[in-house]
Image (tube, rainbow, N blue to C red; front, side, top):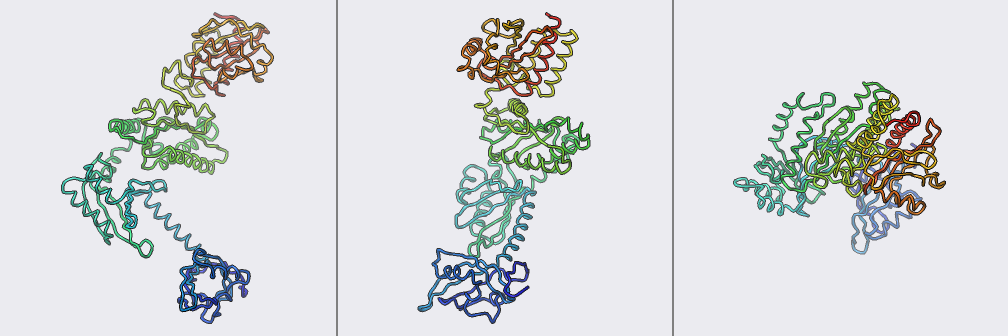
Length: 602
């Protein structure tokens, strides 16, 4: 390296921090051994002579300022004749007689940056270890007198308890979490923590960890250490030996009986039974439990097997199960309930934490699966119900989560829906009439199969118009259907409980109204209030017949006449007509009009 060149290399034996003191003329009055090892024994007596010429002004301003200016960054000449970037930290200012002294610390930026990387990787390693152990960690800071009990899940710290040590002690005893002879042991534990005892082990039986729900054998292991060179803190772990025994016993009984062999997570019966038990316990306890039931479905999974083969399809299923299990961690239960359908119960999380968890899981899966099959665009739809807010029994929560999943599918997939009454209405009230989400929450593929079946039967004369209308109102939860024909749009078929007999729909012949039909002859109105200004007559007619939203489809028949089929929703629960609904019903309408105009059936 040429003399006076800027050196940005990393040398492990180079001091990362040196200390020295300057007087008012920038002369080095005191320097530690590391300082002279770095700068050289024969260095210039004035330190500003070692500072790069371009940095001298900022250096001198820094030294002459008071303690409010605590650091600056300059290039300094070291003994090998090269400049190094240094972070100068002002430690203190004091007087010796009439001379002003400034005590400084110099840190080599390249060296401390590399040291930081080493420490960071060590921290990540220890956090990874803590991530997979069952023990909880505790620490006590004597300055704040706060006791914190926490654990690591999914590389994040989750606080189990954070309170004053004395308050924690009094609360545990007053609530009966610690009783009998164990009170003496518990008192000894609190004393050991508060006094900063170097090493201690305390065993006791209590319900501290379960907050009164279950009595456990607990082992507290702790020690004190210097936190910042002056103050000592107490840290340690809390073990539950009985928990390990319970886990081993449960695992021995799992195997084929409870596990889904393709994914290694719980099968449908096992996860359903366990989630039901957890929900029932929470319901009986009456506590405000933060629990969410999720139903998850891999989007377009059938096409995965068709396009990439069953082997890759199995990989997608397994990868999804692994990601779901990793995301949930120790916060709940996960299981596979169908081919590409999964269920999970998440406990002790906020909605914000849940959103972050789902976002991370879904993005991670997209990347990992794309590495195996770049053409495959993974996505999943998720429906979520909240315990307490949406229901307090498994059946209700499952139905709501399943309905929310349906909504996610209808909105275009690749999303999650957390049920919200204000947005989605009372989706369990009167399943057949008040819900605008489809009876039984039919999935898109089932709708297309229904459409194909209807068209085939109609074309073969095995299904009458009345049967078709009845099938659609029943299966798709459409409240009323009317079929119109000709220039005056006279009603020729109608089913449903209309308040006023349907006679015609001549209003659609208005040029302005007709312009709302798209190129496929489809007009969907999610809320008839949108017609109030431009089409007041149509609005009044629809309102008087208790119609709140509708879907209209026009097509020309074999007899050269124009036909229109209108699908109506009554009441106040308006329907947002999805692309799936439109596409499926368009297939039915074309088949139906072709049959009606070719040979009129009963």
